[in-house]
Length: 107
Image 1 (cartoon, helix red, strand yellow):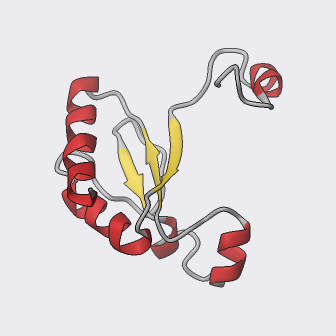
Image 2: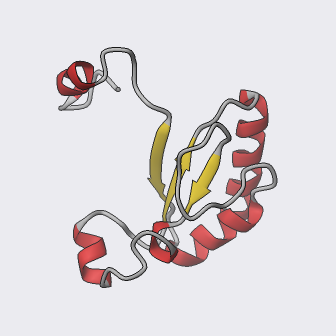
Image 3: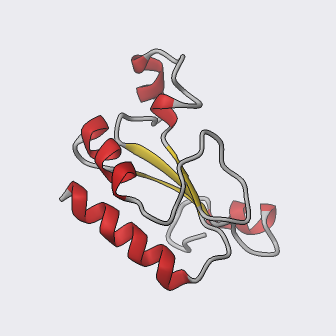
């Protein structure tokens, strides 16, 4: 949804009612960082698949992409530190606090 993104116009056409609340981010430190982050979450449950009214987190290397060879995962942009987050309807302050606490375990 960022106006600076090269495919912003396409996103506007595909999602005329607004953008979704799903995002992915790669943690420096790979698998160890991702697992530390997941262990650090207190309010956001781990799920093997995303899409719920509650905020959830997934780790593709251990779930959806576990059978994909590492080189193919890398070519798809699925690195060992990749975490997927689906934002739900909880209070934003609770979500942010949980993410901050989990990220503190990675730093």
